[in-house]
Image (tube, rainbow, N blue to C red; front, side, top):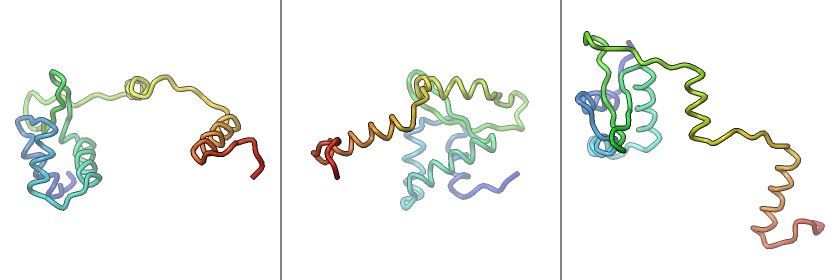
Length: 123
C-alpha cells in the first residue's frame, strides 16, 4: 500500500468513526495552518482513490468516513462508467454540443459588451 502523507494520516484518523466534512476541514486546518485548499482537496482525493476514505451525504450534510479493508463487513465500493456518466450529467445538466464559430461570435459580443463597444464596429 502507498505510504500516506502526514495530512492523509490525520484525515484517516479523524474520519475513523465518521466526521462531518466541515469539521474534518477545520481539524486539518488546525493541525496544518499553512495548508492550501488545493493541497487539502488533493489529500482527500488521494485517499478516495486508495479506497481509504469515502464521502456520503446524510440528512443534507456531507460526511467522510475511513474505509477499513480488514473489517469482516468491508464491501468494496462499486463504480461503473455508466454510473459516473449519470452523476456528471445530473450535476452539469444535459450536454449540448455547440458550434465553435457560433460560440466565438457570442464571445465577441460578450467582450464588446463588457468593454462598452459595438461588436459590429471595426476595430
